[in-house]
Length: 275
Image (cartoon, rainbow, N blue to C red; front, side):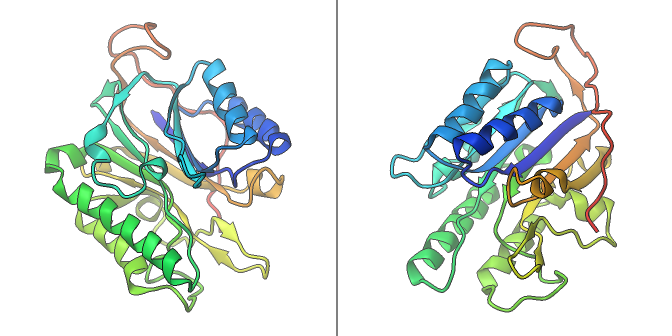
């Protein structure tokens, strides 16, 4: 199994980043998408600690201090610039290809948040448009084994509860991913569950964090869950979101180790879907 986790780290300060790192290293996810990274000491601690534990890090800090996204992988990776060419904020959209069989590509996203301020709305809309335009230009073969995941900062049209204030372009983003053949992993495996990954101050639940998989991976989706533990323990203000996909490794865990066609091993820790 290929295990993938996405978690918003809420631009963790150093003390909270230390606890987050401990939690992440207690797990054995093959790929971790970290959203809302920063240029501060907390993010540096997280990435340094993951790298020291043998994970491969893909991260492009934003020169203007904007929040971003990083990917950590236990599996050797190679760059995937074709997945990000043209995206307006590259620091929010790292991409890579995993050394798996079939080769699985990963695109992490931290979509800008917004309120009614025109500049923020424009920033968000431009980012979402450039992401879908870039994905739309890819050959269908490149989308077949693609996983897109992260904090999209949007909800679906049929989200429960319903919330006013979201703009048409925000709903359009999830529709565009579906039109491109990218499947909402959790919704596919748990069609009757309305998951929430972020809880507002008033106790209102929103599903902002997602994993989408290409059509080549659809028959191999094995599990998906929202994990409350990091939010309830104060590690971040989001639930983590995990998925397992039944693919095999082309080489062993870690650089230069293992044998050809070695199977990926799945986590043994229990998971539960958010209600």
